[in-house]
Structures are given as C-alpha cells and as structure tokens.
Image 1 (cartoon, rainbow, N blue to C red):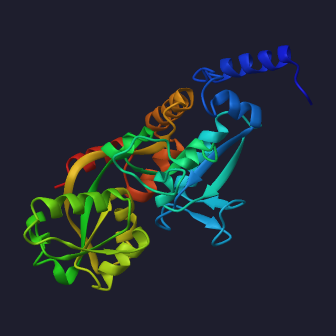
Image 2 (image 1 turned 90 degrees about the vertical axis):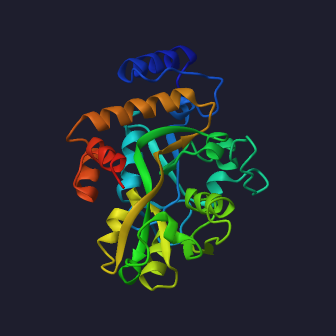
Length: 301
C-alpha cells in the first residue's frame, strides 16, 4: 500500500501520539522519520563474550539470528516503534565500531565512524564504556554504570593485591578497548619504570581464558562482562577495581538526537519498572536490579 503525502503525514502524526518521544527531524541522518519510512531499525552489535549474546549461524555478518541479553534489549527498543518495524542486524568486529571511511581508528580526531555515517547502523547495541576519545565521535545513551575489575588466577592472588602490584606484569587485552587505553596510560605514567607487557587477544572470552591458563598475569574487564564469566572459571577471581566509575551505553550518531531521546526514554522506563526486560536480565546475571547494580559498582574497591 502506498501512502499519499497527506495520509503519510496523518500516519506519522498518529504514531507520534502513540510514541510521545518521537519528535521527527527530516534533516537528521536516519532519524525516526527514516526508521518509520524504511520500517527497520539497523542494529549493529559486536559480541565480545558469549554471555552477552550470540549470532547464528557462526561467522555470519548479515542475516543473523541474534539471541542473548544485549540483542534482546536492542530488539525490544526497536519493537517499541510499533509492530511494523523490524530489527535489521549486522554482526560486526569490535574495532569496526570506531573506524573511519579508510578503516582506521584515529583516537584524537572527531569524526563519525563509517558504519554509522554510511547508515549501515542506527546504533551500536553491545554497550561499551563512554570515554573522552569515543565521545568525540558518537553520543551515548547510558544503560548502567560500570568499572574495570582486575582478574587473576587464584595462584597469583597472594602477589597481586593492589594496582601497584600490576607493574611489570603481563596482561591480556584487545585493541581499541578502554582496557588498552587504561593500560597504555599507566605505562606512560605510574608504570613507566616497569611497564605492563600487553598481550593482545580477540575478546573478553579470550582474556579470561588467558588468565585461567596463566598465559598472562592478569586481565582487565568491565564488571558487566566479568561477573557472569567468573561463574564459569573457578580458578579466576576478580580481586579489585581500577579506574573511575564510568557509563556503559549504546552509541549513536551525534546528529540523531530524536533517536537518542527515544532510547533515553526507553531505558528510563526499563530501569523504573521492576518487571522490565532489563531488570530481569540484571537479576538473572547479577542478582540485582539495574539501580542496585549501579550502587554495587559505585562501592567496588
């Protein structure tokens, strides 16, 4: 069915009544008006741990079937625009989220990452920490608070009791992460005379496997990813937190203010409702509501 100009205007007006946050901005890239026109929300997701979700068939990029906490929450947001709106998935690599049109990550430059600029993605849904260099490129909608936790093999616990004990040791991380940025900053300052030796691995799952096998002395991981994984690795312990408490969230093009506003309203309602999908996910993963989890992170030593 084709809509005339007048009937399309009526349709969008009625939808705005149904979705009060849907302030339409025809000038913005992939605004809510564009989502309604194409009837799809383009969700890109970089899954760094099996606990956060999985894509099937293995190795797929597009035409994936997504399942797990991160995809389910993103799909619920897409569904909030109405039953006619579908979720279009793109399964991406971690570094792709930050690459420019030349496939490079330039931390100090302000640009829109190519996957967002090209409109392949409306937002990144795996959730990652907001920091200064990422904020130059994207805007964030906060899901919850998080912090780094240092993971060690139980055999190393007597020797690694504080951040000072990390000097000169080996750590597993992967590129373009806040983990790598923190380690690099420490190596340039407090660990300058005994820098941490960084071993690059693929993702969060690979970090904890390296710690479990004692291939490295320690790993860094955000509490969101670490706590579910620690249940699976009896020889690995989170010993203390490092770095500041930070915001974990979805990332959007800076131009897409109406879509960000919709996401903020959606997350605010999810956090407020004890029986919401998001609170059920946090209760299952951490035994806490989102608000209780935030308080836990703020009190982490």
